[in-house]
Length: 157
Image 1: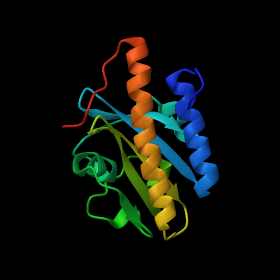
Image 2: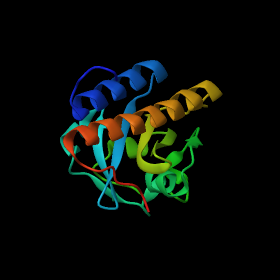
Image 3: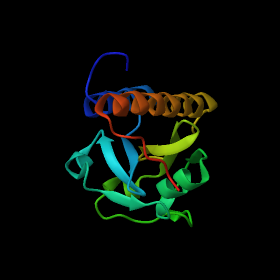
Image 4: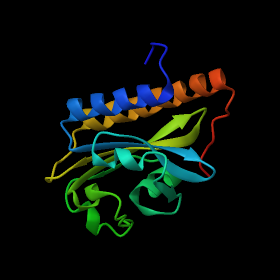
């Protein structure tokens, strides 16, 4: 994250790093844009949806994480959680385990990182801590990147 790369390239490297470290089947990064969460990076077949897949802040597990500013870990049947919303564009919506953290910048939520596993999985404390720390680091990266380009960081709600 310290090299001079474009934001898209850095986010792509981060999702690959997370996938390798957590041995997950999917990692998605959403950023807040115009009061919506927009898919910015993905490790899998949803790459064609980057920039086009948008969620309102009141939609699904991802929206809940952004609104509540809290980590969410579900070890099995994430699709049965009452906060869940099915998106046909996301094949991961049928995956069992879900771990999600807010991306924080200047004490505001500016995005969300989602990690999903096809099989049930209990996420360890170190998994949650690592992902939360990455969320904070990505928040700092966004500030630096957007200062460089002159675009302000948008926050949820």
